Length: 184
Image (cartoon, rainbow, N blue to C red; front, side, top):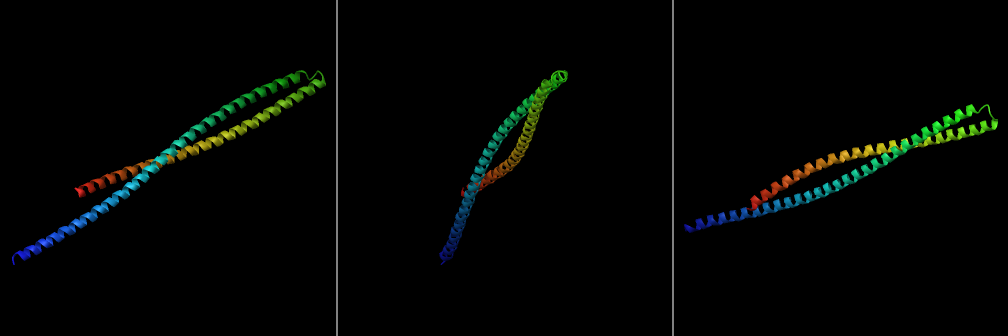
């Protein structure tokens, strides 16, 4: 008779131990699911980070190309300006020559005026081309500035993502340690 209450108490303790074991198994499964979910999230974040790094590299490459093209436009503009000065000097020389020969033949005068008109027309054409090159250079400069701003925003976003990535790594490490302590 005395063994029955002891057996009943032992059975009750056994049931409680089995219940604790089931709860422990459920808890371990829950933590494993959480860790798996965090691992997937971490993998996605790493993929996003890699993608962003690729975009930054492409943007930097494009910025370098844009700078090269802008430099070419600046060099062309300098060449055109030098040509304008040369043509302006030629025009001035031609006008001086025409003034000196004005007393000579009317045909020579007409020929000189025709040459001056051509030089002025060429100078105007070059001025127009220089203005177009200047406008193009300004457009490239604006595009370059936009790309620099875009790169700055991308770098800021990359910093934010890195911080989030580091936080997720820390959380994952803590979860692994908790899981290890729960399993142990």
